[in-house]
Length: 478
Image: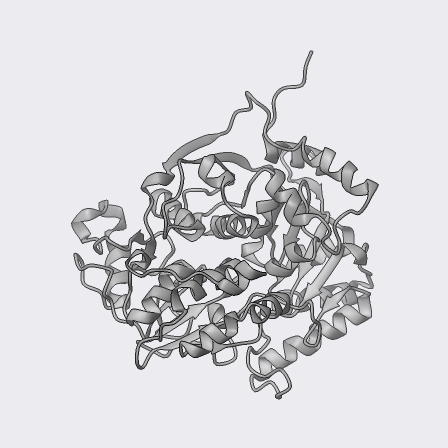
């Protein structure tokens, strides 16, 4: 009797399942544990109190990203809490023998950027991190999700984790994206459709022609925000695009081991005839640039749309909409395009990679940001920063009047002074627009790098399709 067809998620789960007791969560083996300075200190303290060591320090990798300043790294860190967190993670990694990409490392960066660029992230893996946007790594066909501090301690001590098997949710994006529409618009459109709880209890697998046409960096953007739809994780089956990205990366398999790995990775995609617990389809041809208007990522509309009125939503959602519009200071029925801006942030683990910076530069090249507008461009890693500077992108940004920074999480979480002031409006390429997320009293519109850059030029929320993009001749020549 042949084995029943399985989904990608089921294959990874079965491969990493250790054991379970009736009614209890399963013990799941963890391949890669990523650590940063904000969520890990208490976990290491717990190990010390119990006299435990890290079971497999070679399968844990740490970096400094959330608390790291994005200004001159040679300057003292003004934020004492940030400075303490950075000192603590360096001490913890040294004591427990964990590889650490710290302040002076050329490989330092946002944890969800450096994992892929170093080749640590690979298809078929289970990957965890004390960070909700760990779903980013699912772009490679890995089962990757965020965990809490007590779970971080468990993984450090045992290289396993207690988990209940998730349900499966297939999101198919048919057709081809139109010019000016990108990966960020796919995920914002999905969350607007299913809501911030639409994926609860599920792992989303993204499929379809529009997904296959995405680059690896674009796929990472889509998977990154799966958590904002309530999903446990999001992932995309590995294919030739995946293999081409990983080949010759520092920690990717080499030589004969590479051929063996690829052969294994080719067996991971969902089998024909496998069933999902839920399936929906979106038409990629009809997607437009998206912008959020409220205080959660599900409150999104096309940039050509109008802010909903209370009568446009179900009665159960009216209190949330009323609160959101009051906080944002927006008028129901008004166009989202043309809304005023004070700050533009281009960066984060969602959109801080080299392709994101190229997209933003294609709009800003030869133009200048609107008078009185502050624009921060923060690369996702030191490697991204180095590549951007080699291509002259930093010169495009500074010539346009934007600030070019060191890598880090920056304004995504309002760290080290990179934040909105009370009442200010910002358009951001990050992943969350919660009240106070980017600064107490700050009001955030989420959008793609193209939309953010176009809005920086206009000084108001702007449809990027109204501005002509300028090719990066340095990249083309390169």
